[in-house]
Image (cartoon, rainbow, N blue to C red; front, side, top):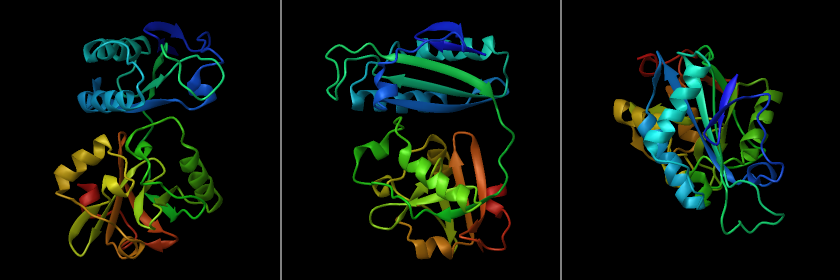
Length: 261
């Protein structure tokens, strides 16, 4: 497999990232995951815009303009002979001396990978995580940063419960999102999705689903979630129906009509 490392195509097994890179030592960086379908990079402009927002917020220089990054992505896809793929862009602050304070002149590390698109995920059985919560007060809840330990804790909890994913509540006990996706619920005929202010990541596919379903961004309590007639998850890789929450069926326990549409 070939990757792009700081703008240079290289074999993944020979690529080298400095052991002092702050992405490795401190999780100091951001990433984007993008779907490629029929050789078309989906929603690229929206992903690049979010990448830039995250880079600007963390004050990490992003190498090159959007056209340059798009060319790098295209080169990686072509080098791996892929038409259906998952592209990941990872940007870190780069190598630095020990300590928390960022270097005054960072030398960012920028990696682009492309792997084959996995088959569509089956309908999900989820739990409501109790091991951790989403901090809706943190500005980091608005960007795709590299520290996913809360998400990992919740997913480990789901694995132990033999579930496919976990729903994260925020510090106020309201629904935020799943470990890897935004969430939409149909309650009393109204499609709802948690607002960004409640800890929902501003997902690219989330924005598309809001437009398509005319969903209202509104606080979702656990009580609302559990009496939903339909629930689905959205990520850059697509839409996934939720059929059970804490072993209780959602609606009739099958993928809902809106989800299928």
